[in-house]
Length: 303
Length: 215
Image 1 (cartoon, rainbow over the protein chains, first blue to last red):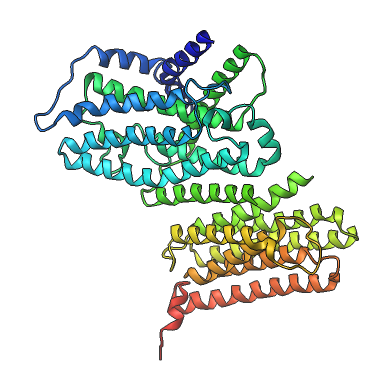
Image 2 (tube, rainbow over the protein chains, first blue to last red; image 1 turned 45 degrees about the horizontal axis):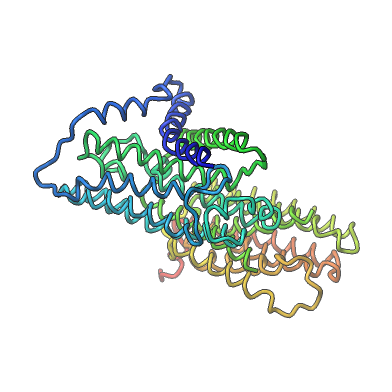
């Protein structure tokens, strides 16, 4: 039991940067480039961690605390997520609310740190990030409520556990709609392409990347690692919802889970390669569309 | 079988929501065409509980021919002739109209059970889908400026009526339904001519130009 829990936490902590490597590799292959190595982010993180950090004189402790609190919040949220249908490390009724708000806390401290620099540019990025997040959050909650209603369970472990397969048989259309909504939310929350371009450094279009311009060294490493962890969390939620392979053995389920996560990363990479970034005014439309879809799913369930 | 019918009904409603959000006319016309094709598929899927398969076959085939092929072709011709691609400034924005559409969907799914029906209900999604589609059509007609989008709204409205009509196929003679479909075709034909006239007169398809007086 202890060994399994340790393995799951190890997976949670070690796998995420690899997934972003897969996304970048897919984008590179589609564009006809060779692309960076799959393990590039690990090297980046090692390099950043061995460097010192530079702090501007206008910043206060808020700026220094931001990356650490952000990473801690996302990692704590990760401990509530069941890996491959096994019960999560922490699990209680209603933990999906805490899960969503820990992610919101991470965003809040990042935005606060950006405002703390006193740069108007970073303030603009924070404003954009927060206003889009305020539209992504209802969609995320509605998806979670649909899952809670379909499986009759109030904890993430129950929602994504063994009760999911019968729920698919009973209410497939509703779950399918909410899975689409969840994918849109995952793209928005992780600042992937239809919403935000993770590679851009053009000031007019940046959202998430603006906020972290002033961070350096270990702080930047924390932020990059936290972003990959968040990608892992949404990926785990999504693949568990759509691809519940009913393997019985622990190790087989874990292996299938890792394969599915790589599949999710490939899917995101393909979406990024073939879609253009939406205009900023179209982004709220997409997020409201995701909310409306999950409201529809909820109505189908409640009928 | 049941799952496929469910999915078809839900896809019809999702297409309604898509139409409220889309600003590109080409995509909107394709969505209406797909909705028409789905309606004829639904007519076939619901036959098993009906009485006369031949009747349903004629209705489904006619609907497919007119709603999914002929009318979209006419609409594509219209936007090509008038060289317009997208609805620029709707009276009600895309996000509000999507929210209104969502409210309509929720209300129609929540309250359709209370409606007294003259016959037994063929499928639990039939009445709410019809109501939601009619509501979407109404919204499109009143909230868009361009004549093409208003015609699309009219088509969606008619699609909703068609869904409701599926409920009564056992009682309605083929001739009545064929008449309705022909009426629809004629209406779109006339609207196409009217659109052409508006375009020639004002060099745009903005129907607001019709309400200003001119010597």
